[in-house]
Image (cartoon, rainbow, N blue to C red; front, side, top):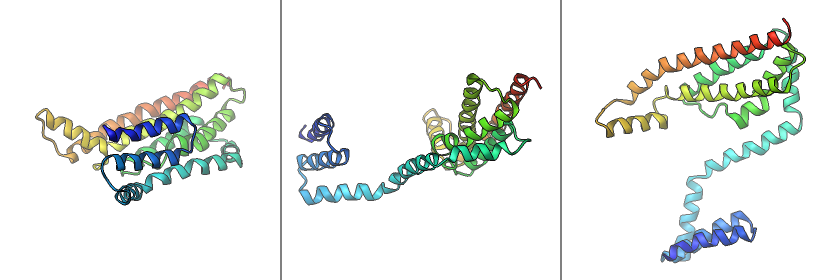
Length: 222
């Protein structure tokens, strides 16, 4: 039970509002020492864990970068770009993004997109600008609906596209679940059967996006 001292260190450290990095490092060292490891071995394990998972930290570098770009006017520039394209509509723009997102996910590029790095700073502002071109007097509810559809487009494209990629975790999860219930299938079979579902998702959500265009045009009296 002494190894649980590391949990106590975390609780006390956060309660005292200390530096989170120092708290986690101290908790790891306390846990290692309490488990009977010497200090050098504990530091070695901690360093190995950091080295093996260092790529995870790279993801967090994207967030401040996007924040900096937004502060410097990324959303405004995206809106201005779409605003100059008179033929662009919110629905058409999101249909194009849906196709790109789904195809990218189908070949394993699931990180090519996402709410934080793509939808909020680029796709949603561009769709909103296109909607303003269609209906200059957009209400707050209409703006929020366009943003929601932009987020939904990313979800649909990723969710139904990634199952086509044979090495995705969801395929392996489905394979394991089926085998536990006596159904033996190959990952390739699951990937192939995911294609019709992805096509239907593309058609159904694409129709919803085009229906959004009709609603915006109706709201503008066109």
